[in-house]
Length: 221
Image (cartoon, rainbow, N blue to C red):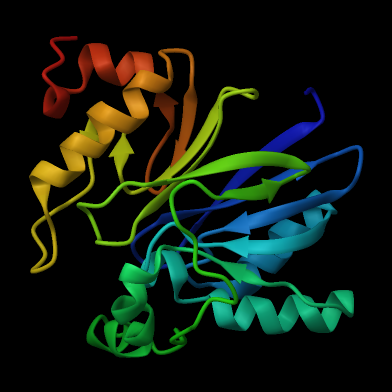
């Protein structure tokens, strides 16, 4: 799958990785977690040169979803057709409804609340650059966080569930540290050490590397 390509664009003051994934041969792909800075995302899409088929959200935090509504409008105007927003699990609905308020608390005034065109649930699939990715519900960071995985390609898009050397925060009123670790250990690590992941902040890694060295998962390096 040499034509499968990805690029990440840090957005918002939180430096969240908005991820572009596309197939260079077909010229079609997706945008994952457009948290804000929509002009910067559009400029990245111009450089990549593909048609956006859908916008995917891993969860409902402002730095991942706050720019989704504006990006959808801009892309539909450019492309002349629908660009649906898909995900996360509907248990993050309360977060998506409060995106504008979340942004205002941090002095970010251009974020918008959003309702997805399609909620996602574990057991479903989404199409990313012509490939089917499984949807896994991985709560803990937020109640409705989802992860997208293709074992055939050896790639996962994990949002804020796991990072290189760390895991997602759970010190929110709705956070659940035990649920987060359980999701990683029972759903993600068993997929195989060779699976590499793109995450919401910082560089990616592989499940094998994190199983061996991530201190939150008992790794010793």
